[in-house]
Amino acid sequence: MEAFSPYGHAIASLAIWAFIVMVLTGLSTRGRVAEQRCSCGKPVRDYANQWYRSERAFMNAVEASGPFIGATVAAILAGAAPFWVNLLASVFIAARIAMAYVHIGTTNQPLRSTFWAVGVLCVTGLILLTLVAVL
Image 1 (cartoon, helix red, strand yellow):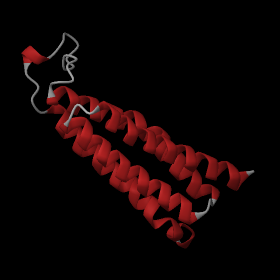
Image 2 (cartoon, one colour; image 1 turned 45 degrees about the horizontal axis):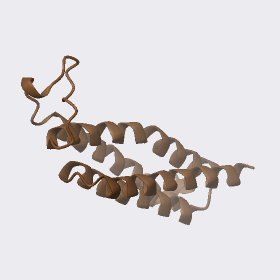
Image 3 (cartoon, rainbow, N blue to C red; image 1 turned 60 degrees about the vertical axis):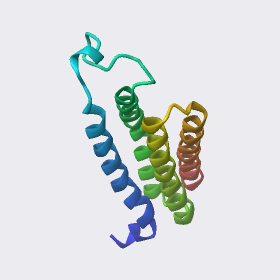
Image 4 (tube, rainbow, N blue to C red; image 1 turned 45 degrees about the vertical axis):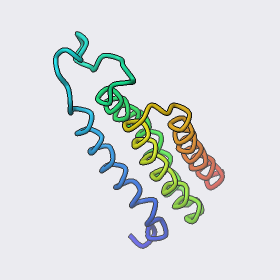
Protein backbone atom coordinates (compact mmCIF):
# COMPACT_ATOMS: atom_id res chain seq x y z
CA MET A 1 0.00 0.00 0.00
CA GLU A 2 2.90 2.34 -0.65
CA ALA A 3 0.78 4.33 -3.06
CA PHE A 4 -1.31 5.59 -0.15
CA SER A 5 1.51 6.33 2.30
CA PRO A 6 1.76 10.03 1.30
CA TYR A 7 -1.85 10.39 2.44
CA GLY A 8 -1.26 9.20 6.00
CA HIS A 9 -2.85 12.23 7.66
CA ALA A 10 -5.92 12.08 5.45
CA ILE A 11 -6.35 8.35 6.07
CA ALA A 12 -5.91 8.90 9.81
CA SER A 13 -8.49 11.70 9.58
CA LEU A 14 -11.00 9.24 8.15
CA ALA A 15 -10.43 6.90 11.09
CA ILE A 16 -10.58 9.76 13.59
CA TRP A 17 -13.83 10.93 11.99
CA ALA A 18 -15.34 7.47 12.52
CA PHE A 19 -14.32 7.67 16.19
CA ILE A 20 -15.78 11.18 16.58
CA VAL A 21 -19.12 10.07 15.14
CA MET A 22 -19.15 7.09 17.52
CA VAL A 23 -18.48 9.36 20.51
CA LEU A 24 -21.22 11.75 19.38
CA THR A 25 -23.55 8.74 19.05
CA GLY A 26 -23.07 8.00 22.72
CA LEU A 27 -23.42 11.63 23.75
CA SER A 28 -26.64 11.96 21.75
CA THR A 29 -28.39 9.33 23.83
CA ARG A 30 -27.61 10.65 27.30
CA GLY A 31 -30.23 12.53 29.19
CA ARG A 32 -33.14 11.20 27.17
CA VAL A 33 -36.18 11.08 29.36
CA ALA A 34 -39.79 10.70 28.31
CA GLU A 35 -40.82 14.25 29.19
CA GLN A 36 -38.10 15.70 26.93
CA ARG A 37 -39.04 13.63 23.87
CA CYS A 38 -41.63 14.28 21.21
CA SER A 39 -43.85 11.49 19.88
CA CYS A 40 -41.22 10.51 17.26
CA GLY A 41 -38.70 9.72 20.02
CA LYS A 42 -36.37 12.61 19.25
CA PRO A 43 -35.60 15.27 21.86
CA VAL A 44 -38.00 18.22 21.91
CA ARG A 45 -36.50 21.18 20.04
CA ASP A 46 -34.89 23.32 22.71
CA TYR A 47 -31.42 24.75 22.13
CA ALA A 48 -31.22 25.70 25.82
CA ASN A 49 -31.22 21.95 26.56
CA GLN A 50 -27.74 20.41 26.34
CA TRP A 51 -29.21 16.98 25.58
CA TYR A 52 -31.01 18.39 22.56
CA ARG A 53 -27.81 20.07 21.38
CA SER A 54 -25.93 16.75 21.79
CA GLU A 55 -28.42 15.01 19.52
CA ARG A 56 -28.18 17.82 16.97
CA ALA A 57 -24.36 17.69 17.03
CA PHE A 58 -24.55 13.96 16.30
CA MET A 59 -27.04 14.42 13.47
CA ASN A 60 -24.93 17.20 11.98
CA ALA A 61 -21.88 14.91 12.06
CA VAL A 62 -23.85 12.17 10.31
CA GLU A 63 -24.91 14.65 7.63
CA ALA A 64 -21.29 15.75 7.10
CA SER A 65 -19.93 12.21 6.93
CA GLY A 66 -20.88 11.42 3.34
CA PRO A 67 -19.35 14.53 1.76
CA PHE A 68 -16.19 14.36 3.89
CA ILE A 69 -15.56 10.65 3.37
CA GLY A 70 -16.44 10.80 -0.32
CA ALA A 71 -14.29 13.85 -1.06
CA THR A 72 -11.31 12.56 0.92
CA VAL A 73 -11.35 9.09 -0.63
CA ALA A 74 -11.86 10.57 -4.10
CA ALA A 75 -8.90 12.94 -3.63
CA ILE A 76 -6.67 10.09 -2.47
CA LEU A 77 -7.70 7.79 -5.30
CA ALA A 78 -7.30 10.57 -7.87
CA GLY A 79 -3.76 11.18 -6.67
CA ALA A 80 -4.43 14.79 -5.69
CA ALA A 81 -1.57 16.70 -4.05
CA PRO A 82 -0.92 14.85 -0.77
CA PHE A 83 0.09 17.95 1.17
CA TRP A 84 -3.24 19.67 0.48
CA VAL A 85 -5.34 16.53 0.92
CA ASN A 86 -3.70 15.86 4.29
CA LEU A 87 -4.02 19.49 5.36
CA LEU A 88 -7.67 19.87 4.39
CA ALA A 89 -8.68 16.55 5.96
CA SER A 90 -6.84 17.41 9.17
CA VAL A 91 -8.31 20.92 9.36
CA PHE A 92 -11.77 19.43 8.76
CA ILE A 93 -11.30 17.16 11.78
CA ALA A 94 -10.08 20.02 13.98
CA ALA A 95 -12.97 22.26 12.88
CA ARG A 96 -15.53 19.54 13.50
CA ILE A 97 -14.16 18.75 16.97
CA ALA A 98 -14.36 22.46 17.80
CA MET A 99 -17.85 22.64 16.33
CA ALA A 100 -19.07 19.67 18.39
CA TYR A 101 -17.60 21.19 21.54
CA VAL A 102 -19.24 24.55 20.88
CA HIS A 103 -22.51 22.96 19.73
CA ILE A 104 -22.88 20.78 22.82
CA GLY A 105 -21.34 23.09 25.42
CA THR A 106 -22.78 26.46 24.43
CA THR A 107 -25.53 28.20 22.53
CA ASN A 108 -23.02 30.32 20.57
CA GLN A 109 -24.58 30.03 17.10
CA PRO A 110 -22.12 32.35 15.28
CA LEU A 111 -19.08 30.40 16.52
CA ARG A 112 -20.73 27.08 15.68
CA SER A 113 -21.52 28.37 12.19
CA THR A 114 -17.92 29.51 11.74
CA PHE A 115 -16.56 26.04 12.50
CA TRP A 116 -19.22 24.50 10.24
CA ALA A 117 -18.14 26.82 7.40
CA VAL A 118 -14.48 25.86 7.87
CA GLY A 119 -15.50 22.22 7.48
CA VAL A 120 -17.52 22.97 4.36
CA LEU A 121 -14.58 24.88 2.85
CA CYS A 122 -12.27 21.92 3.55
CA VAL A 123 -14.64 19.49 1.81
CA THR A 124 -15.01 21.92 -1.10
CA GLY A 125 -11.23 22.12 -1.33
CA LEU A 126 -10.97 18.33 -1.40
CA ILE A 127 -13.54 18.21 -4.20
CA LEU A 128 -11.63 20.83 -6.21
CA LEU A 129 -8.33 18.99 -5.68
CA THR A 130 -9.96 15.83 -6.98
CA LEU A 131 -11.33 17.55 -10.07
CA VAL A 132 -7.98 19.16 -10.84
CA ALA A 133 -6.23 15.80 -10.48
CA VAL A 134 -8.58 13.95 -12.82
CA LEU A 135 -9.17 16.60 -15.49
